[in-house]
Image (tube, rainbow, N blue to C red; front, side):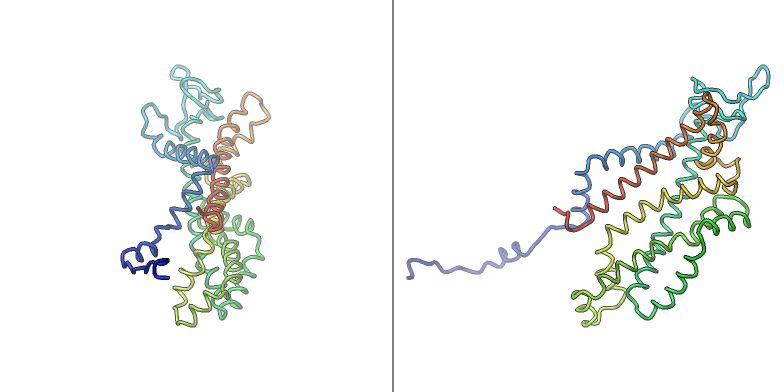
Length: 309
């Protein structure tokens, strides 16, 4: 029998190699995400659009978004000029350059969207995690949620915008008051589903602090759905800004925003020769919204561990 078998020797270094794994959750997520060509296409478009939006004022030959341009000979306002070599997107009804106003408005709307989206994500995740995991807090937070959620968000937006002075800060404050509620409720429901699984019960039995259980056990299981909520919160905030402007409670006309530009274009859209004033800002707004939506969905799928490579 001795000639049929060979005694195996234990190799310490070989044992360590077999136990080592270079797996990285975020690296794997990124590998899956970049395989989605449609998502990568829209990501490139969105990054290019945002970079150009912020460098546009520093490019040579750019006009002011708030200046009313007039004919140097007649002093008549250059109103409703169609796109030409001087005014690339034409002028509006009072002679302002639509090209510079669209990019200035995009900066304003993106600032609102990012601020509100980050706030909704942070507060929603914190409140939702505590709401779902700490059972003693469930009755209190549920009552707070029921009270706030039964007040239509549009009513809160309208009241705050009406009471306070219209400004970017006012718009952000109004949206942040209740914007976190859907995210908190969503995270809470997901946490309730997985909080009593075996690995969480084992952590609690070992005396793991609540904070560590939430951050290490629960939230990593929810990365995909949380990223999707964040991605959708940004275009939703921009949409709310457009809504407030539509009803006359948005930013003042002197502050360019996509909401102001869409509203101005809406008022002249019945004239075929002036529809460019609606088409250009609506196209930029649609591109941003669609890009965030597709990227959010794609990243959510890529962050799902079942899809990892």
